Each structure stands twice: as C-alpha cells, then as structure tokens.
Amino acid sequence: MAFIFFHWLRLDSAYHPTSQAFQFPARLGKIDLIDQRFIARAHAHNVQVHVWTINDPDAMQHFLDLGVDGLITDYPDHLLRILNRQPAEEASWATQ
View 1 (cartoon, rainbow, N blue to C red):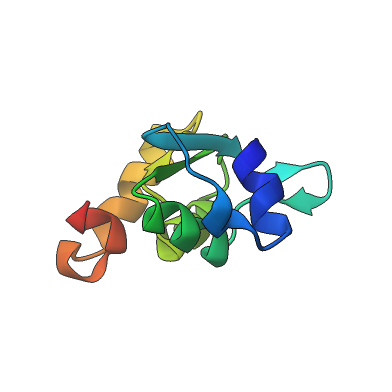
View 2 (view 1 turned 135 degrees about the vertical axis):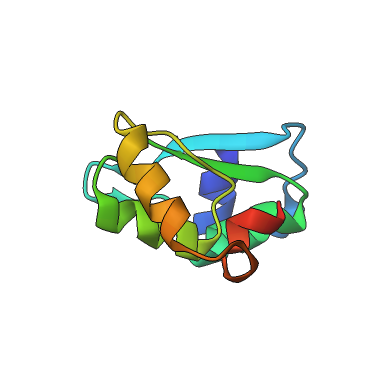
C-alpha cells in the first residue's frame, strides 16, 4: 500500500519496492486505485500489477488496455473470450 500513497503524492520515484508484483483491488470505496500512471510507474520499478476482482467484461478489457500484468476474476470464461478476441501482437499483455 505504501506505493499507492507515494503514487498519489507523485513521489513514487522515491519508493524502492522489494516486491515483484503489486496486487490490488481496482477500487477502494469510490477511489480508483489502478490507473495508467500507476501501472507505468510500477513497471518503471520492474514490478508487475495484478488487479482483482474484475468480473465485468468491459472492466476486464479496460484493465487489459491499461497494461495490467494479471487480472483476477471469478469468471475466467469471460476473460478467455476477451483474450481470444484480440490478436496477440496487438495486446499489451501478450508480450509480458
């Protein structure tokens, strides 16, 4: 969670994570935790971003488009349909 606070304060470059991945819910109450800048800054620190629990197909596509490295869902069949729709060379997640 410390990285999120550093991220909000725009001080994430001062944070040195020891984790290989961050796993967070998409939202905390009404606050969006995961956005494109968060993902970019985590990736700049060589840390993967996994988001949970994403059950809506539109939200799945949204987070894949943002570049998350992992997506946890109660409906893997929905996620598989989305992944199978995209040519691998166009999907940011396919290169990871």
